[in-house]
Image (cartoon, rainbow, N blue to C red; front, top):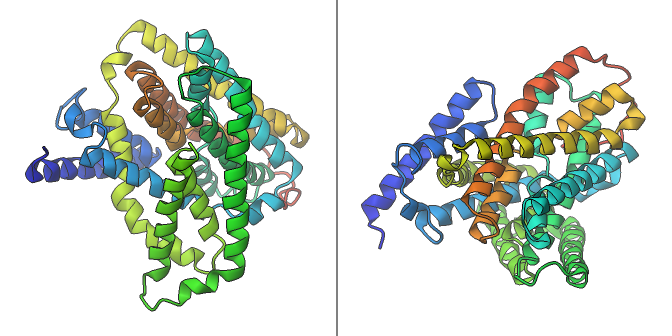
Length: 402
């Protein structure tokens, strides 16, 4: 039984810790998510102990708020991803998105299997190596005034494809965690179900919404578009679990559908207060679940170093190969821009821990890898962009801004 006073105190501690950690991170010119997760490490059981293991266990109020926070986060990501964007990306952006997913996934799966995991669990671990956190790269590009560069357009266009493929892969590997091991037939069936669900809901839903979004305006309540969109988000999150997919996939698709409405910008503005309130709970709770003692050994640190190296090299290689048509210097910039994992790797690590795919040690290593890629990339990318000639910024006008 959780006493109301204890719950409120825990909520207060987590929320304030998130704001302090985020502000310190921004002052250090780092992504706010880094500070929020670090704050969770500080107030969690590993250090100060202000948040106890019992308060962040599955089904507790903090855990439920964290789950709602990540569902809304993926809804907001989908809200910024329009189906039309996929039709505008050029060949380079497409290749960067696809190869930049396949290479990290393959290298991550081989490392995990070599570390003793079965193939089904290895693919789950590998999913944490896949998705780029485009928000981190976009912030760097914006601050440098580089959004009109050819490389920037390819990076941001590829991020649209990257997001879709990452969500698809995540759905597949979640569905494979049934204890029966790796079976190609099951993989094909799960892949077909995931593609079918995403195609019907994503493609069909966006087309339907594009033609009939006016019905959102019919209710007279000022917040009606937001309320209906949130109902769609929660409904599809639940529906995706019936297909064996992660709830965040349904939330992402709901955001994509809502992005096709005339109220897209209104919805983006109205969801910001909800994100400001709830999303930090996910990252602080995520940080508080990290047992720093799991990283306190030489073996763990060497593993973290190896995992981080694989994460960086695989994205540099995958993204760079896809962008070779732009020239070697530009290919390096594009590959570097695709490196940050940020919140996406953290989300997958959290799902894997909750599902019992891996234990606290691997969880801590994956989250630490996500943080390190988010911390290391911005200064390196900024250095590369400052050194590179601007070239012809009009040659990649088919890549969309996100």
